[in-house]
Image (cartoon, rainbow, N blue to C red; front, side, top):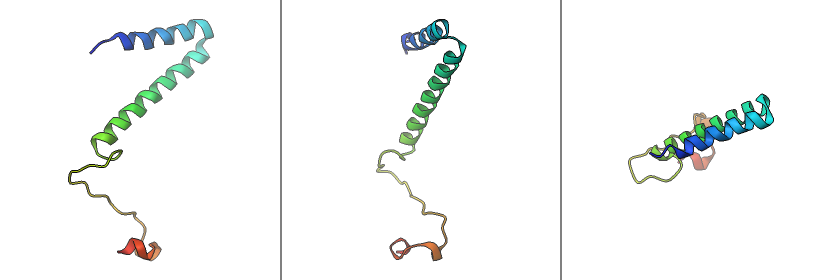
Length: 76
């Protein structure tokens, strides 16, 4: 893996801190961490076949509502 992207992200965060101050640096760093988390979650969902339909043995579970709360279509 090439570390160029990591270096660019870190350099940009340092630049934000120097030019804009700690408050905006913390906002930018937090935003970067959230974006990393979303990417990791998307990758996990894809691997678990939640984002894209899977051709494997995936069983979709029904809602936890009681049968009295279900519509007729949901009961069948």
